[in-house]
Length: 168
Length: 205
Image (cartoon, rainbow over all chains, first blue to last red; front, side, top):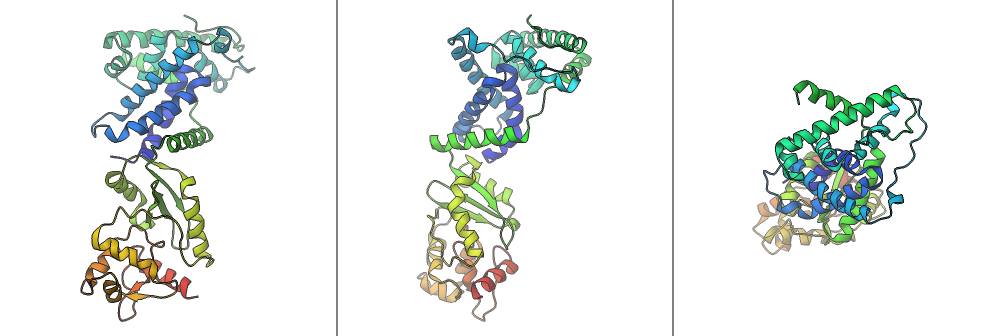
């Protein structure tokens, strides 16, 4: 069994990207910390042949659901996304909008896009994490990507990001 | 989805920013603090520079567990600890602050004995008896393998003393470098004969 430090080094950045995609920036770091603390605690019992990344994303998914639930109990105003900063519309400044567009997707689509495209898990694993069929996971990811692409086209065309894009 | 649109989607998401080093460091520090708080950080480690190369130091909650020379391959040492003690291992310098300070002082000739709790669980039986005796060989002096065998209660176990020293999990701190051949030559050392000579020269000055 590898020292847990190696697990953090190898998968930490990807899991943070997944957490950002499903939760947005505000809660992502809490979800990341909760995920790796839970993983460290359970790590000695993990079977040697387990898919470590799928295992971590499964834990992260549960933490994200927990945070979504506690968020739902908070006043609406808290959930408002931070105002986008001024941008010149250069592509390298667009990624903030991509995060926002991701977090504006319906949950199922957001999870499917994050777990398949960011974590790189096959749809079979995505379905095992989110529930539902492999085909449903594939469809949700495809729908999510279609919305993101539309948002991307909009963002590329309009330098001002102040609109509410991506709310499908 | 076709293969084409798959790679298209990957290109789209490649626009997401990479995680920067500061963020990684901040999150790692937070994880270490929470793991300590919850009592699930079984082994903390760090590396430190010294005149005998980069040393790995690792500690459990009980005390210093392992000191390793670079030639032992730190990754292999950590993998061994994961198997022998626990895989709940994190780079967590704070737990090693005190021993690191004392090792620094030792190499600056400001310290002649170590005063930190030791976790001897990696050694058992006779080897452990030998290691327990070694701190009694005072700074700047040496003993032969035969003398150590006698002191550990088995005068004939000279070769076993050699093995105990060669497998000392806590070199530098538990001074196996002060055990030399009866003819006065330095003999083997877990850190290499060069490192042994460096330590003995440092202590003789």
